[in-house]
Amino acid sequence: MPAEEKYKAIVIGASAGGLAALFVLLSDLPENYSLPIIIVQHRYKDQKNLLEEVLQNRCKVQIRQVEEKEKIENGVVYIAPPDYHLFIEQDHTFSLSSDPVVSYSRPSIDVLFESAAEVYGKSLVGIVLTGANKDGAAGLKLIKKCGGLTIAQSPAEAEYPYMPQAAVDAGAARLVLTLSEIKSDILELFFQR
Image 1: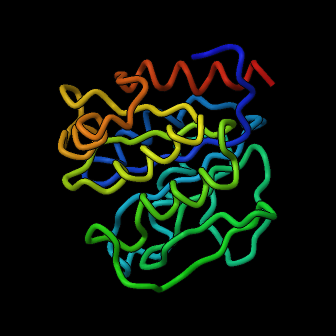
Image 2: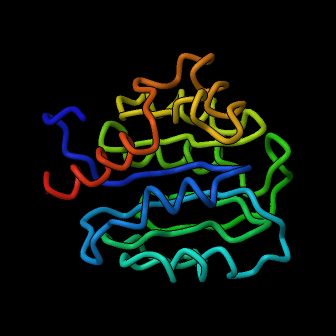
């Protein structure tokens, strides 16, 4: 993890196999974690708050589903609601949209990543995890172009390697790491604040 940068937010995209990967990344974060973490996990629209509840039962850090116009706070893990695209606005609030699907998904990882890149620039960390489509590759590439830190889960380790491999193939990932290495980097950011 580059020590010279001070990061202000982390965005994570996951699809098939993502729940297990998110458990690994989030389960050891302290409840006073110092950055906001914003997640798009592809899921069915009828899943309501199930993902948040399952994660909260295994994690100390606060986890909640995003609400329209909610202000982004440090130390909260935000998860995009099912069937809505998630945008980050310049005033560091969220907005939700039911615009058409992007990369066969709503919420789309690319939509979140691209809006986050425009707001946070070089102070953003973007992470693409396991998944069975290419969502996230274009958004991760924009984060990299804006100077942010971009990470793809090692496709060799991912339960579904296609999504992180698409990010690697697009030249979007500055680092390709195992889940345990990504977890170490996320924990390290806590101590850099």
